[in-house]
Image 1 (cartoon, one colour):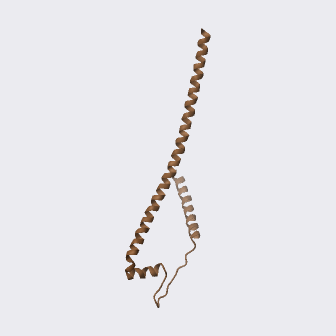
Image 2 (tube, rainbow, N blue to C red):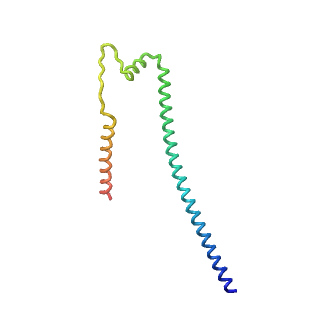
Image 3 (tube, rainbow, N blue to C red):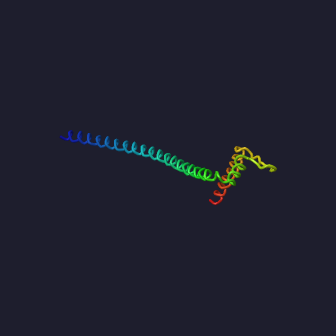
Length: 129
């Protein structure tokens, strides 16, 4: 009788341990899936924000083009577009142009300045600490 009780108690304790292990493994599985879903959600939210910005830019461009279509009959507007966009000139006028450095050089200069300010900010933070 006592041996049956001990066997039964031992089998119940093993059962409890197995159930506990299953619960722990299930919890970790659910947590990992939750993290995966959250990261995917974050990525999709970023993509949504960029697409919304693109929509706003395209709507602004569309409104500019629509206003340009309406102003096609206006002589002053046509002259302005011819001068600014097509680089045309009237007789007797001289056009002056400026040569800007390539975009990469300007970006590198900005990045160098940005790096300097980041380092300066970091040191300022260290001093305040």
